[in-house]
Length: 330
Image 1 (cartoon, rainbow, N blue to C red):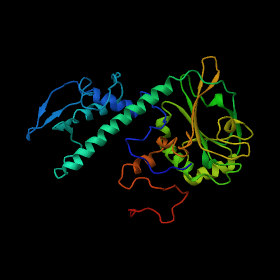
Image 2: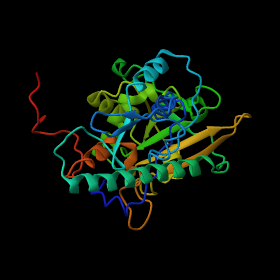
Image 3: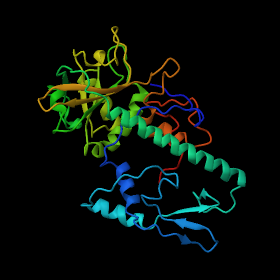
Image 4: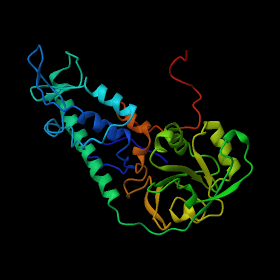
């Protein structure tokens, strides 16, 4: 899995990403903004206006549609609502103020405003793509694939090895199973550094994902090899599955007939009668001219680098960095 430098926002085509459910952080932010129920126009000392964000004025302020709020019944919702009361949008001459820095040049302000509008359109396009994904018709029926899995405690050794079926990955009704195909095993004799970076991130957010979906890592490597690499990375929050003799990776095109490996992410659903279906898969390659960028949105690393003037360049992740951190640990 590799990724190249991003292109200009104006010409970039949004790439697929897993659309978060409405109970995710994304939706919580929408609820936070909806909690501002007043459309009061506040006058600032310098004569500018500060307009609280509400459902009725959100579109005019260029922040996209705001979803209807759900009932607040948790401490988290209370905290979000309380925080939202202090947030407001300020405009000067029709330009949204993103900082309080007074020495920004007119050229910078104008270009930043142009970029903001492009970012809004990119966000809306991502939402349109996510809606298209949700509206896909029922996917192909798949077999109840068999995987191999070691003890849930990663530090408890690698035995006993048990078999687990795809159907057993579903922890409840109305939940999807998401499986990341790890490039490790067969002809891929060493763990893919880029996949490893992806999975480092998934391990950190697994408890958030678990509120809405069932998530697992699948690799062609046998359980001991997979688990040993996981121990070196600290992947103690993820289900680690070995595909064994299963055709799982081959069927989903993350493996070829010679045992070559690729990274892929797949989503599965289960009908009420227990029928298992493939709902969606995405690969790094999505076109002749897009061979490495297809799932970039599923890792924060490149998206954070894209915020900087230097961009992502031709940087690739490694399993270890010999120069260590670029800051002095306390």
